[in-house]
Amino acid sequence: MLTIEDLSVSYGAVQALKGVSLEVPPGRVTAVIGANGAGKSTLMRTLAGLEKPQSGRVTFNDTDITGRKPEDVVRMGIALVPEGRSTIPDLTVEENLKLGGMWRTHAQRNTSLTRAYTLFPVLGERRSLGADTLSGGERQQLAIGRALMTGPQVLLLDEPSLGLAPLIVTQILELVGTMAKDSGLAVLLVEQNATTALRVAKTGIVLNLGEIVKSGPAQEIAQDEELRHAYLGY
Ligand SMILES: Nc1ncnc2c1ncn2[C@@H]1O[C@H](COP(=O)(O)OP(=O)(O)O)[C@@H](O)[C@H]1O
Ligand SMILES: [Mg+2]
Image 1 (tube, rainbow, N blue to C red):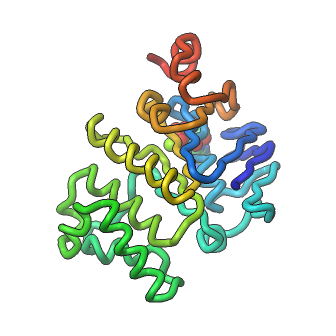
Image 2 (cartoon, rainbow, N blue to C red):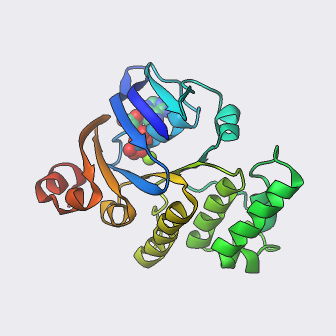
């Protein structure tokens, strides 16, 4: 279990997160939704060790990991799929995948590679092609596949829907939901696209200007029209 307590993060005078607390339990998707600038990426980057919090605490399986370095965090089992996917266009699909979990044993990485190809068959079909030949949806699968190569217990997914067709987004997120259920993976999904995110999530959390304004069962959040109008803009 990943537990976040009273987390505050600022960039100089900009307070991006203010006293955020939430839990990311195994075996399900927890969705944090909010408009552009709400602080979603800051939350993810802080959990991944890329930003240092001003105050607050992050614990993972009862170990305090607040302010740990990114390479330590990922080795402990927390993997980030950053916003914008960040796959390397000049490398092949397989080379991109193999960049994940470089410190793991050959056997562990082979198991994860086979698993990635089973989950995302299109990556197997295109393993020796350049990542630049992939469509947006395929690149998102590659980015998730690469994170899975680290053998994570927690997957942090930052706006996977960005720039993708709704049908592709639904397919990818449903797969992520199934993976969480089947393998016990804890998934923290942050999205502006509330409808799709809440469909696969068990718990929904609404973030606005760095503060949590509402949390509860995803279905309830999805049906709350007032909340939608006030914070999600539709
Ligand atoms: N590197 C940075 N330097 C200064 N301000 C930043 C930086 N990154 C994000 N911010 C600001 O922090 C706030 C939250 O940003 P972000 O976490 O990217 O939100 P979201 O991912 O929800 O769109 C915004 O006001 C944004 O302008
Ligand atoms: Mg963002």
